[in-house]
Length: 64
Image 1 (tube, rainbow, N blue to C red):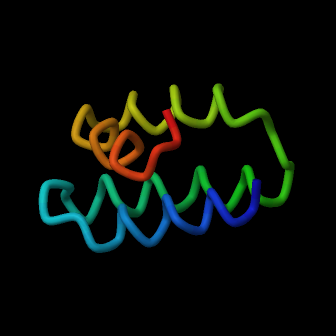
Image 2 (cartoon, rainbow, N blue to C red; image 1 turned 90 degrees about the vertical axis):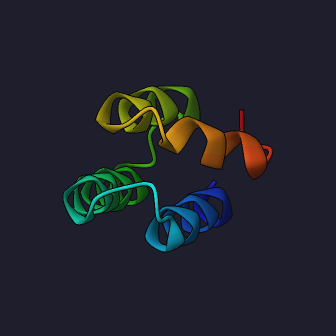
């Protein structure tokens, strides 16, 4: 799970479709989830709530 979250974090960080605020919000959620080790399905839903542009990143990584 941690490797997948790190891949998501890297991809979000390099995305040019997300604002810095969206990236920051996403990073905070990912860090929280790394600490709490929550279920990935809920994480993806929370990230997609921040921006619909995150969903294609997750699809590209083969995570959803």
